[in-house]
Amino acid sequence: MKTITFRPLRIIKKTGKITVASYMQWRKVKAADYSEFDLIIKNEYADLALDEFVYDHQGEQLFWFNHKDPESLPKNYADLELAAKLFGIPKEHFEGEQWKTSEPIGKGFHWSVKGFDCDGVPVFSHNSAKYIATHYSDMNQFEPLTVGEVLKWFGWFLYQLENSRLKIV
Image (cartoon, rainbow, N blue to C red; front, side):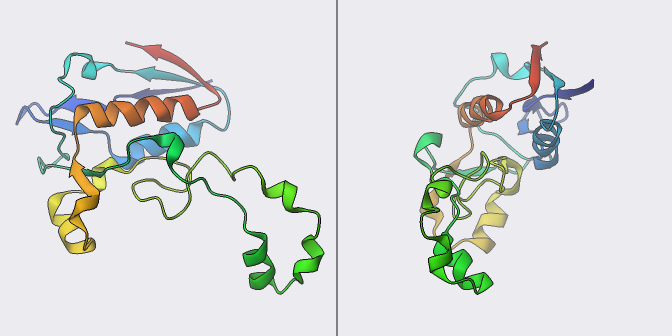
């Protein structure tokens, strides 16, 4: 059985700043969820203050979209009208089939929800001040990333896993 060791937050020894795991580390956990695996969580974050700011591996402060409630974010549903248009299939062909699209596709969010990939994996490590200043026009959608925010989404992320056996060390 596969074993993955994961630490969502850690302290950079050289600077003493708190950093979040890279997107690829979060992605590795999600990718392993296709079958049973052991997930060992290093809880170095347990003693960190929830209001402490989080930085990337280079020491730049990170920012996060001000999403508050995972359950309120739009899910990804199939759009039969769009499918008919894209594939040139008459809409009548889908008559009576709408019930099949009543459940979301996968565990992720709609593509318009920023800060996550298609599977709902958060991309905390991407949003430095320099990055958001050059890629976004509305700065009001961001707030400084804190330990508490990372831990909230970490809990949600773990809850979405289906095949992990957790061990906290």
